[in-house]
Image (tube, rainbow, N blue to C red; front, side, top):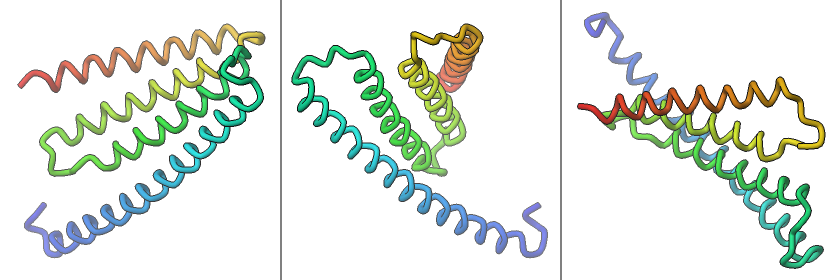
Length: 147
């Protein structure tokens, strides 16, 4: 493949495109994380003003933890973009990061789930998704740990 005429030029152009795309994605995700963090700070401030240090309302706690997880997911996503391509386990690191993002997003869904209107098939599907993601993460983790 490398012996084809123009392959090196095309490969360099694609590398530049990939770097620009990663820069744009990094800046965009950073902005989303900053805005999310601002919303978390405002929500915590409102909670402290209205309820003091006794947040006993499950709705308030669910919305706060939902905001926390949204920021954590954005930060983990940004981290997965910044994995260096030269790293020896580049693809495995990205795969583990994507699996962790999927697990965090699913756990976030569990946290913000309204327990008054539980939909059993949805709960079974979410549980299956967490179990499947956990098993795949465990398999990938063990695969990369062995030389």
